[in-house]
Length: 87
Image (cartoon, one colour):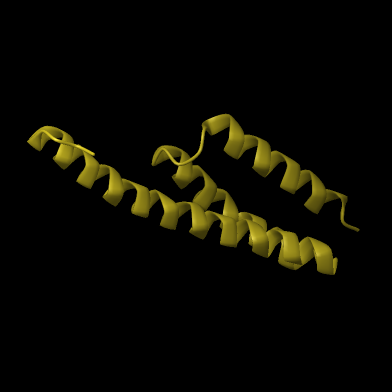
């Protein structure tokens, strides 16, 4: 447990930051799930639209420090390849 005032403040800040990052991560996962569902249904137009909506969310997660740049790029690349492969 934090003892000094500085450590107590850092603990409070960490809790707030954790909650914000958790919400951001959840929001991004929702967008990714929508792409996955569109892919599973086989609807290329819906999958393309869902991917277009998910890309800026993923990159926003990068700028906010939730994801690493390469992780987001890898996810986008793999999803776009799967969307392109639809028929």
